[in-house]
Image 1 (cartoon, rainbow, N blue to C red):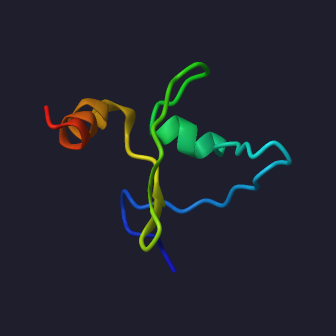
Image 2 (image 1 turned 90 degrees about the horizontal axis):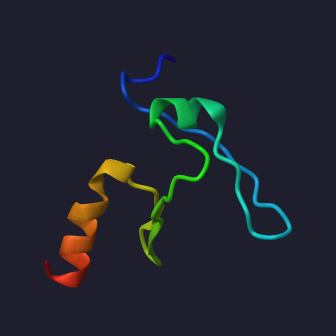
Length: 66
């Protein structure tokens, strides 16, 4: 089964310190470099998401009423 264009799925393992390693393909696709800051959003019912870093200001504005 071919994956739809622009759609991805990866698995990660949580280490003993609670850290995860983002797969290289994910880092390449989303241009994530060492030292970058990411935001993780969570909802108990819907799960967690890591939005693209170029959308941070949009999320901060919605969360903090910009």
